[in-house]
Image (cartoon, rainbow, N blue to C red; front, side, top):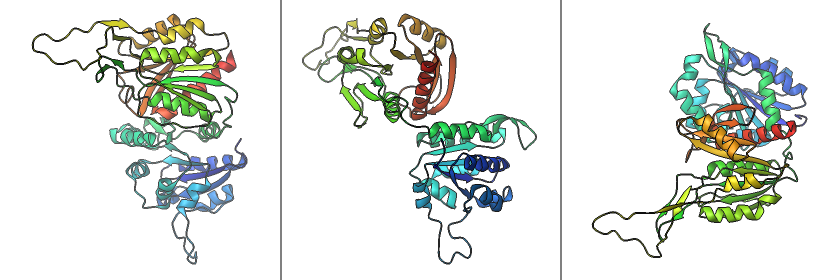
Length: 402
């Protein structure tokens, strides 16, 4: 799977750099073309000679090597050459440079100019890893689309034990293989996705709605397209753009409009992911004119139930269709999500909790739990793009098992 792939490996100055020797060797054995950039501090832990021998390429550490006769290491070209840039280990020092946009060495300058995807594997002592600044910096990287491989627990160089170990080379290679896997896993499959809120009008200028931005639904649509699917995206009123030859986008405003759009096309879909935050109720009466403020009592707004789109599809789904719903809960999260899973005949439900910092509406990150009739799988805080990858990884796994 890595044959002919260009991997740019960045190594920073931490004791975990010794693992990157094995990582370099295994990547080369799997057919990857590996180029290594090390920071000046990394040379205290690993030697350029060792890495050059294992990778088959010169090791880069500065913009202008000694005795280069005016030649320089072009960080822009390096970022364009790579199919994937991997920084392992990522120390707290380099992490702060990446998060703040510094470019005072070849590695961080290459990161800033890289047009390829980037993956990082943090490694530091447990208190450093647990520090709020570290988490803020990792969240910044996730926000910028960087895939963060969570640090593992175990014995650390300080003699302490806790979370902060760089993942093992085998685990990093598996993540690389998955990232670079062929993007045709959903070829010839049709995927329906709903995204965003619905707005239920009170009058021409006011509505009942919620804070959904549609970011999660659009991330799911992008991942389905990456995997080769024909995608129908039914989007509520959002400020989000997505354009692709295999994308059929249907824009709606109200729950009834979303219901009509879904009812029109759900029967021909293979996978259905309902990420939209549909308003449960709408005003019974909608004024044709703006409702004026009048002295005295406030107006009473009578509400009626909106159609339950997910329940409708669950009642009518075919045996070969895979149906995914979302649940946003504030108490007894798993129990309430399981009820929704059963009542609406879902194959999987993605649970969000408003009790989790950085998760839910409007954020670029999300922390979710996948619930099926058999399993509960917790996913740590990640960018919504990464969560979308996890969603389809779980869907494909469950399909393979069925």
